[in-house]
Length: 367
Image 1: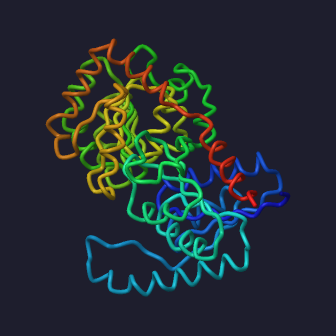
Image 2: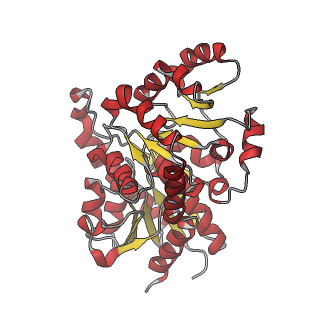
């Protein structure tokens, strides 16, 4: 089929947007001339990030359930009805051969409307614990692309395709050496390097735990790359001034390929995208899952790696007392580091974007 037309729906966070964009690029590489349309939620970051990648996007009037302010949910049923109507209009005008859902607010109304119009749909489930929306949509989906084992707990077994999670191309194709990463960040190649990253917005529990015992960490001949997120940045930057270059503080690290290359050990949240990248980087890691993620999926994600001897985990509410303790255990155990690196490497899938793209093409061209 020439000139396939594909809609990719979803977004809300980098964890949904980066895979969506990676799938889009892969589709255009494999099936030249493919016409793509992204559908996101108005006011969310995909409306800015997707056009930066050269793709067209339209926005729906949709929002998720607000757990902190229940009154804001009064308009939710009306927004759901409106977004479903908007989705049907987009589908009628664009006439896609298939629709891909990557999770996030816009994913459900678009895939639901597509299924109601008998348009083939594919779900890309990033986490090891499936969300309610995807479980509902899977009943009529043609395929569900997953990154973890045992997903038949949530989805029909005959629809499952093990693809892994797509990551940014510069991560999957990473060729940067440790020395190059260290030089880029202005670090001392002779010291063990710890990368601390809590997602794009940072992580309060991780930041506070590291801050409280920074002197103890540095005393182990360690230097730190610390991505704090915006709320903690100024405090961390002021704190780092007294450590004479041993602590490099960033609000956000765009060049994560250099940060991963420079690192010997990592502390991280356990989002699906972070895990996919860390498997490719194969750096020993201590996860501190975000406890308020839907269905506590970050804990499930982290445990899937812990069970393969590929990571350690500390609960968010134990971070202050346990995180540095567990970190020091890892820093002093080179055999454990080797086991983790090898296990992560075995779990890495570098061509997830193309595996998913080929499945999309298959369902779009099946008559």
